[in-house]
Amino acid sequence: MSYFREVINFMEEYIPGEQPEEEGYIKLNTNENPYPPSPLVEEKIKEALSEGRISLYPPPLGGKLREKAQEVYGLPRDWIAVGNGSDELLNLLFRLFLGKGDRVAYPFPTYTLYRTLAFLQEAEREEIPFPPDFSLPDSFLGCSAKLKVVSNPNSPTGTFLSLSQIEKLLSLSSCPVIVDEAYVDFAPYSVFSLLQDFPNLIIVRTLSKSFSLAGLRVGLLFASPDIVRGILKIKDSYNVGILPQVGGAAALEDIEYMKKNVEKIKSTREWFSEEMRQLGFLVYPSQANFIMVKKERRDLKFLYEELKRRKILIRYFPEWPDSLRITIGKEKEMKILLAAIQEIIEGVNV
Ligand SMILES: Cc1ncc(COP(=O)(O)O)c(C=O)c1O
Image (cartoon, rainbow, N blue to C red; front, side, top):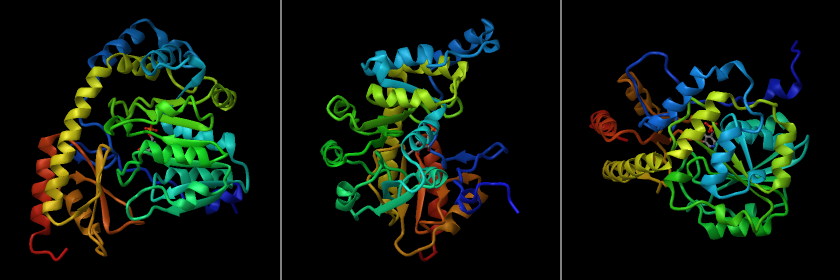
């Protein structure tokens, strides 16, 4: 007997990447940034602590964080909402648009949280397979749904959709379209320029990846004022704590610092992708801070497990056993990983 709603008993739960308690791992499994955030983040957080700001509730709409986002991204404030990580914003959007039996469509494979959120709403899921070139499937462009979602760059593949493909999607869709740009700072461009022309476009961003703030939990949403009003109506009053607000605003203020880290990661990504190709893996072209490597029709669990034994964590998804997702760390870490992979697969028929 369970007191839960029936859907909760049958729901597949979202399994986040491991966060080991023990020290000493090279952690390349959850797409965090290997470089620390701007020193301004620590400075501003210390200042907020010394001013006693944690005794008071935080500004409900994001205070300085929302102001900074307005300044950096050049949008009026009523086009912006802030969240406790972008996961919270995605959750709020699914709750805003989907009721029982409503249809949500997204190309697949993608971020599996969309599936969990759909389950929670008892929504119908239309998971449309990407074609081999990872462009948008025609049946996704044209389908009717209450909500469409694309992750761009996509996780777990790292593949990237062009502006014209997203523009086509927005023109052909009469429903809201979420473009999840969690990794966009590692890519050539955002779909930001389409916001004014397409009132159905919702962009969700995070400070967890490029800005190195995964532990603070800061997400940003950009959409027309009507949609932002909907989010403000249903969110918790104080959904983002004062330290994430202050730290997030400081990170946005020092955007040049973030850009330098991103450039280092991009160059490590290109070098490491080539090395993995040399080792005979298929490597999807990535515009994110991770890559997906594949060996057709092989189960790569042994490689994941052996690396874990050596205290190197990468991501293995049982749903795609022939593939592994590897976060791009510091060059030194990637060299250790590469040597370990070489050693493990030597003499093994993979
Ligand atoms: C595609 C995608 N969207 C959103 C998120 C969530 O990020 P946040 O830390 O802001 O909740 C992730 C995290 O891995 C992600 O991969």
